[in-house]
Length: 462
Ligand SMILES: *Cc1c(COP(=O)(O)O)cnc(C)c1O
Image (cartoon, rainbow, N blue to C red; front, top):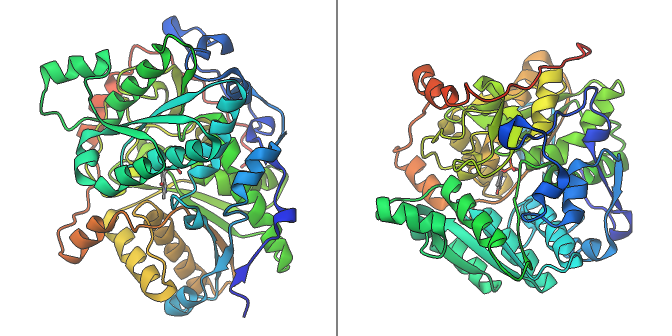
């Protein structure tokens, strides 16, 4: 039985797919101060213009620059693997396939956009990129990309992760990036917080504020900021995953999957595997497409569709998205990459249309799924990825009950070799499930009362 489908380098997709071209109702614009739609030029101090153009583009196919392809070739096309041993363990008639994004040097899907973003910045004459990182996956992906393309990289890493995860920091430093704990003394935002709360563990919101400030205050004009998820251009760069998967499935005679699954924090690895199939669904294909989130941070399944800021410091424009409120601080579950209050606007609009159907799963079910996967398939999943695997198991069991030989495709977004403390706590029985109480959810959302509301536009076709 063929358990691995490889694609030749010559067959790798040469264009990214832009869902904004095909959504049945267009995205509503990001809003600036006073609720006025942002003009692209307003973002110019933060992002290079070529990336801003991609952010607002509605062109369906966008060429991948040759030099970006050449870097991606170091690990792409990623293999499409069949989880035969997992199928057997579950006794399911379903065929389970996954795109193995853990084979990239930093160990996740994130370098797909980090490489593209570094290249566009370089093309625009930028010398240095700043960013924030929570658990360290995005920081290490950007450090890797900047190193290969010859750019400086500065990462503000949330203090508590900086102290608890020294290996991610060492990866960044090995790739030549500078990594400081946030809040730091290097920015006004950081100094102000430290003056008030010298012992703060930091937060992603504070780190974003520091990274943006460090970019826009560089007097030489040669520094920009970079974001690893949520924005349209990030979703675009990740679609190479789903486009490759389509070609790989076709190679073994599978016309379409019945179910497509990925975990979703800001939404990028989900968008990456799913958007090419969302396009098929818009054109009539029957596919269940499922983004999976933790019950402790139920942005898509329980958050309202609102205009909200991307960060706690309200430095970013207002984005139309499902959100738990920019002040929402999720419980400290181990899937750090899924602890985000919002979700990509392109994913939100797909949810509203009924093109994708989100699901929330508890962390213990996720760890059980991850451990079974590791024991039969051999790869240790990232805690984020375990959410996708738990949903795959739910779908595989359903296929067994229905006696259907369904094709399930999921995104194996990354390995968990830097996140073994979560496994340790699971084995010691120290993990708890944490479904968010409705009372706690209300508070951060109330903050949004005075802000404009996006329209809920649904064609009713799905
Ligand atoms: C960052 C990360 C995620 C979550 O981010 P998305 O933008 O939603 O993809 C998921 N899995 C892994 C391995 C990650 O590093």
